[in-house]
Image (cartoon, rainbow, N blue to C red):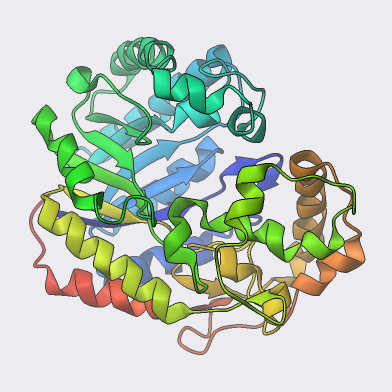
Length: 396
């Protein structure tokens, strides 16, 4: 495995919820240094919506001698808006590439567009698409692949006119992408109980394109049973909020079934950093053995899912991050208001701010390992660091 990486979120935005509420350049620089020196990464996938943030973070990654996978992501917009955004971001990435001609910058046209862009399948937003009664029927029939590849072909040609470095796209396993016009095959691929015995074989399937394969996302949440849900592990936040939902609110059957899978004690899910660590290292070994070019563990940090000592209100349980965040005083009200908005848009329920405030604990606390940071490494941080450290650096 040549490329040892991690996803680094500078501000993905879903339903108005910015996953990186504040962008402090001093913090960003410090975290990138930690990713290089202590996590032993040689590549970082920089993800987010704001192009200036993407450029600023990428600039420092390059100065640290690491490789940048420039991954702009604008979700739940039309194909026209998405295409325009991709071109604008590509121009910024090309300027960055020209300023650092001796460094590696790979540009991603997007990720999982069947799920996150309008116009491939029916629905104005992610939840509407996933919960549409015809979604899985159309996916099984492959009806999404032609419009997806039509868009990717158009975007590929447009990007290559303004960006002159290598290109990829980070797909999801339900998508059958025409990879001929890309330099790297990219796939976000989580292991779960449905495919555990087939995971390696499924990953090897991407090698048939005779291009280097990059795993753009994989990982595990931080509770017992998270390994069974894989990429759907975040869904238990709905189970955590179930007591506060309207009694007459009927959740989709799939969600109801998933939130019942993990173990609960006294009504709450069970934190398990050890499980997260072992699951990620197991997958790293499997991906390495499968012959992939590199991996990006999802994800380094999730500031809007803060840790809480009370397991009933520990939103870090649903986080895939390698560190547990403590809420910053400046972002508490923002996190509460954004979560309330998501509850309304995703579930159609009003959640009182005083309920959401219970998920906030240890405001302003800093870590012990890195006293200048408002987070503390989980066991998974050390597990990934140890695995990457065992792999000798190869020139990229």
